[in-house]
Image (cartoon, rainbow, N blue to C red; front, top):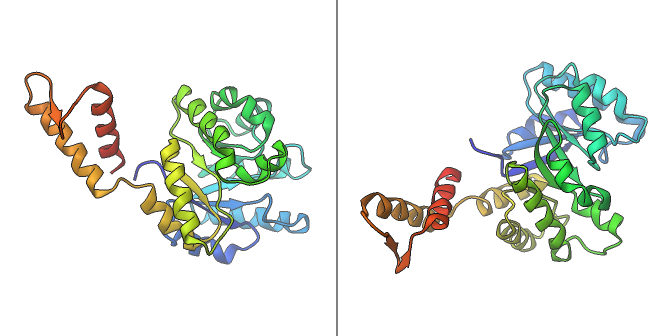
Length: 262
């Protein structure tokens, strides 16, 4: 499998849901120790996470913010769970350096969800251990004092895409669609996500996974076009043409990208 398209959150204090989430069709699960878990349940959630990875489970773990009293214990637990990718909330260069220093060699997903994080997006993307950026649209909107989590935040999304590309990371992960039962809204969000250059999205319910996976996968007609482009180039001794359009380097690169995703 290539880069994950769908990341499904599951609360760390609900261990009975871990295997169900992993079997939901999501490309990756995120076991959440932060927002989804009450302060009194944090210790138990850590034990659940440790048991999941000790038993051969896989996934991402979102730790608590480094400015909280819970982060130190989260990192200590994860030091004993080497199979876990770590999602760092409210990512900033200093915090990412701290996590990378304590969990050396561990892949990190940096969650850009503050104005400061967006302003420092290029430094965040270039931080040690970071393999992908994700957009925390809900928290970002609050921090930026912008009501709404949809298209009004597209300038922030664009900046995250550019920072990811500049750092040569995989394309980033878009934030959540909070309307769980509104599939039309989700489909529209996924289409915009893809048009902006994201290739993955955060999910908060299993019913969102299939829509995200389909919407962020190359369509049959795109795959067929890409194959025709490569065939035309291989057969041409000069300038290739497909559908009446010249195939230049950017078109060829796009075709190869589609086939890589497929």
